[in-house]
Figure 1 (tube, rainbow, N blue to C red):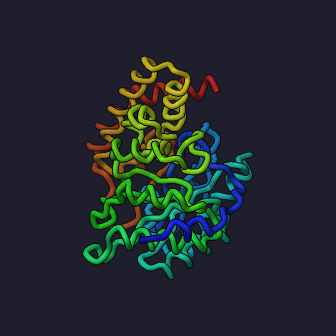
Figure 2: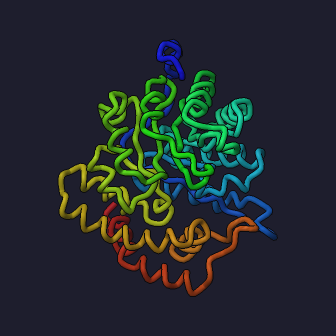
Length: 330
């Protein structure tokens, strides 16, 4: 068990970019060459500008949607640098740049955090260690996050994603303890557990619109539900395709326009159901269909079948109409 006095003895880090309520987008990574052997930085930086200037609260790079597990360490550093370069160039230098980091040991996680910090990340999104799930439990998760946060050069967010972590599900009891650490600034719920979100939103650290601890969903097809229990926003792959629509959904909710928010939520949810069926390859296929770039995932991840892509494109028709209308009005 981690003693609270140990947590409280660590100083908070000054944040150069402020996390705030809103929509965060886990951007795709683009490749070219056989098996996706080479980063397509031209397409990547173009995409960063498109997303960053759409009204979102921040960019997430090196996430699951960004195929981080398929990248070399050098490529990860290159992508963080390229993201910061593109954000600065388009007038978004004050926007948070959250980068995926971590490792299966405290030593490797610390090295990962140092690398993304030197490359320009303002915050880190960290999965729990999970390679030895039978030997890891709540005590190990507390030790892991506390140890890396104690020495992290940037604030970190907890990444709750049992689907890629051998089923390890970080309970709200664990989050409650970790939220007291001055360098742990939030949690992303790709566990999609609204009840857990509600409990985390009830934490003292999560008050004041998440000024000290941001609670974020892991998708946008239940965004109204997450906001209704107090969440501060979401990190959603839908932002790669229709970022303005997702931003507008949260604006409508925050303005108390619940009927309009519900109507837009239905449109987004129907589209996201088709997006989720195809995972990262479908994300890329739809970016290609609607924005003219995207390409294939890095092998051995397989592209979506053409007929499946067309079905998803049809399902996105109404949402992309909304996105186009919002783009015109902005």
